[in-house]
Length: 322
Image (cartoon, rainbow, N blue to C red; front, side, top):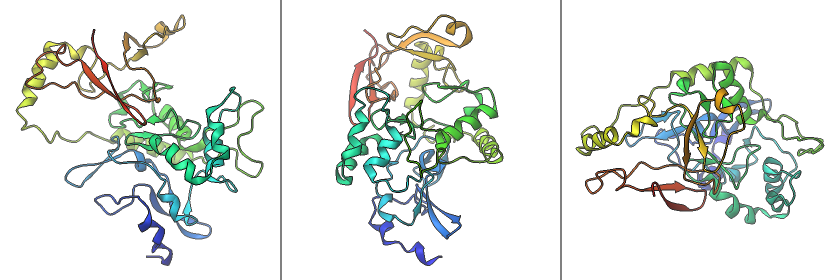
């Protein structure tokens, strides 16, 4: 083990080791200056720790993805987003700022000291969320499940990209791993000494990644002995849940409209759009619909009206049906 591996900052950080002993955000990587700790990799967000200690790759995480504790091990950490010369606040402003919009809320990062940035940014790194490059700390991305992605027509919960084959997945993977330029029109978000495209994996690596993601399979259900499963299956079939949550993927593979939004003319013919609206507003930028609370006291969908909308910093309860 290299001498630099005994970094006291790692042990002082809030980063918790996974059951196999690895840290979720760190990997040893070779650099021109020798072996260093690398920050950020696909498994940092797309891995779930199961109850038996195994790791399920491709699944949404069940642990905090916050790298705030990792910053304490600097300068030994090598990040794909190298914003040399920036303080923490300026770094986040370059990552999220939209100065072409009047009264950009991200401007406040530019004048913040590191102790002020932490409490503001931490909710965006809640379990299952991540404010990715060119995104926003106020509208973090909900980390999607990558298992079964080969059969899905759209990538991401917001369907910003169609998925027609490996090339689409490769392009999307490149964009979310910092190869998306931050410049917009005359606006230059990075300084003259910083790279315009922070990181870009070679096509061969992206193709291999796409094939690996296609190979991922869901685990066996560990709760088959639960007697409530048969009751839940009966309710699922009787209430017609499968019309939208169609097996085996339990999705209709269609776009679901945000409440109050009308697609532009022609989109309905070009894209698969479900003619229903989701009652949850955008709020903090994410919403995760929890399972309907079907139990012995809940025998119909109307009895189970509440769904939980997970936000970056709060949990709201809304009506599922009038």
